[in-house]
Image 1: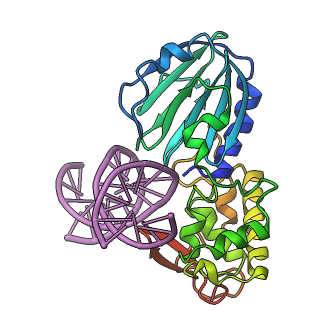
Image 2 (image 1 turned 180 degrees about the vertical axis):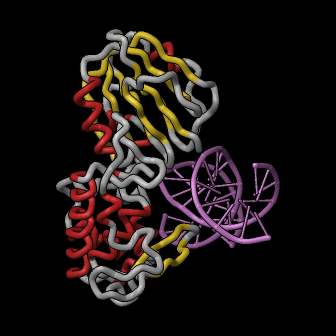
Length: 272
DNA sequence: TGTGTCACCTGAGCGC
DNA sequence: TGCGCTCAGGTGACAC
């Protein structure tokens, strides 16, 4: 389930491999992803060269020349395989061939991902990115900014953390982990947090994301990076998918709670 | 306008 | 072994 750390891991790997590569062929499965891939996607991407790769929230943004931005979202089960040794695996929806003979494959068995090419002069002109909230690893993600955001909403805390229009990059795993580390109950009303609690939440969020990036993301069943390597962060999770196990901090039992159709894992004592 | 709910999708895991 | 059911969750559409 690619969230910010997994997408950042992929972006870092691809930066080493793809910068300067020229696209010579694009093959599509024809099956729609979250939205259908544009009919002219292949012809427009062909003959372009990759100049820069960055991440915006959970989006991978590949800057190409002549001027354009190739946007990839991995959804829930998207995988990028750079230069695989075998033929395209099942559920491969996009194959990009480069002039040096290497290939990039996009696989996504649930087809919740997104692939698009935007011929615009600036990232600010891309609708998907315009609506994204603040990146938790950006300088602007301060306790004051977060506290003001929280004060404007009566939503449950975890629901707000998952809202990509407000905070871009957190998913279910890291929202649960950040709330545990900040000792905050996921069902708390956002506007009930004090300034001090907002400070704790900002610190916890940044810390958990940075640690996960250092461990190359979290791998359960789906995530591998562009070289096929699994992440290690699942060994460091404190609450996520640990229902019925003991809290590593207070030895209470970790609970699972279905919140907005999503499983929330928390320690009822540490996060009272 | 803000908030909550649901559908989309398919593989994995489980019980029978 | 095979079948059917449930669960997983990012996103956008929709209802209230």
